Image 1 (tube, rainbow, N blue to C red):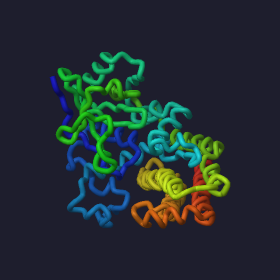
Image 2 (cartoon, rainbow, N blue to C red; image 1 turned 30 degrees about the horizontal axis):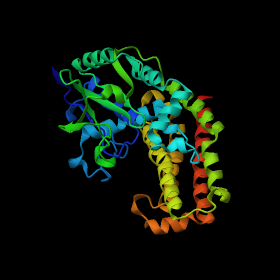
Image 3 (cartoon, helix red, strand yellow; image 1 turned 90 degrees about the vertical axis):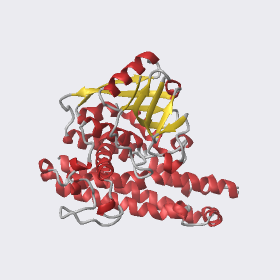
Image 4 (cartoon, helix red, strand yellow; image 1 turned 45 degrees about the vertical axis):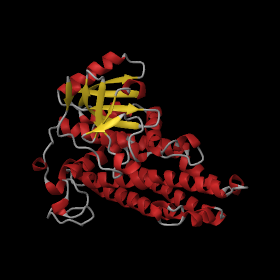
Length: 376
């Protein structure tokens, strides 16, 4: 028997690079029955549209917008903050933090902090089963089938470096699983996929590639409140700042001895590492900003709106200031490779990038201060 869940909203290519909240948003929308643009109140999901339905044009204009996709973006932004992924810091000098990119490592760091999946499910009000690599294959497949038979996508982490995906179908005769691969058009095909069918990847060796799976079994009373989210944000930011990964990254760039005898190839590798490293705050801090913009429209949180607006300004500043460092290493094709190599050979340029990282860290400290004040 073969079953594919229909009307699952896939996440956009490159627009939402954090795959855990993106995969969760795909599952959440299908479980909550948001399967048609008719069900989406148009202005309520886009962080840049007013209640008068005025479009800023960045999405291509109101007539061309995929409203379900934009609603998915709204859910993604909320759960990127709820899970804590948007708050992470990484260490530029730590090879493991950037292998192969920052995404999977934010999950790993959160796992070391607490059970971010349990916290996410508690906020959403979902009961679930979680299977690790030691689980029996037949038991996992049976749980996946039961979930898909009730039109609930399964979240599965393929490793060690592939990150989370939404599994939306199975073929028990072929032993295959099918799923959404939103990164295909941005980074290329999913490395572990055997092929694609109707834009879904399929895998027969899913068990060999799987590191864990989360099967949502039904709805329950939410056990996590917004205040719990804000208090956990405080604890995560305190932990991140205490660990000092951003501070260590800036110090690493300022220490010229780290770059003695750097040849052209090493400078190119350094550019790639900085590009990847800056990708975390330049992607995820604005995601947090957009989330808090939405929260300024939640009536039950009206007493906190003044604090939300300050957080939005700080995270927007982080996004803007990161572009200075990003362009110094030729991100988005803004500089020829030979100029990047020449620039990174200069201690002045490396110090300038370190200054940007310091501003990002300082903004995190100011957000923490704001949250503490808000929560009294």
